[in-house]
Image (cartoon, rainbow, N blue to C red; front, side):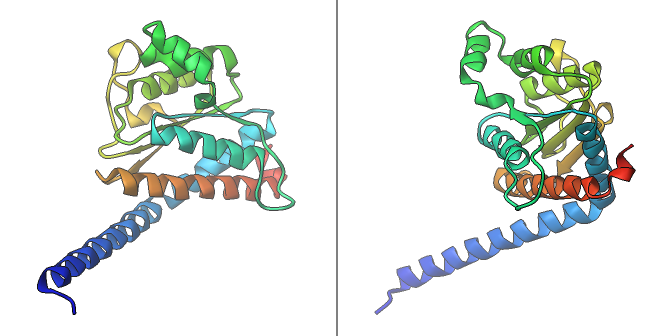
Length: 215
């Protein structure tokens, strides 16, 4: 027989799960409704860069480092049969270089220094930040823009404005595309980012099916 305490616990658990699903549904719906046109424009710009021989270079911290790895493998190893492989690399994969830069006191410029060595002007840089305040991500995006790369920021919260390289702020307008998930919940932000980069992958390939649009 269920006790009153157990019933209350079950009720609290149901309320928590219901609220979580509601948030996981509402935030992405709002985001994609508002950003649909910009997402299409970003995919066209990415497809053009790939068509010109560019590569995708992705980076982020912590859980978002795994998202950088995820988007890279999506492009290099397409899960849909018949889709072409496109060159992509997660800067977070090179633990030796990253740890070496951080040990040398260069944590805030770790990704930027990798880009200076690896990146070419026709490449694409995608940086992830849950709050837009990750110094090493902002520094790398600033460097990428200066080098002529196509720059995309996938951020959450208020969208950032924290210190880039040298401590200077970077605004959304300084990126080619900045997608801000308006939430303070890191789980919902990451869920939305994951859906977004799957959409980016799919639409890039749709543009490649109409290569006349890429010249």
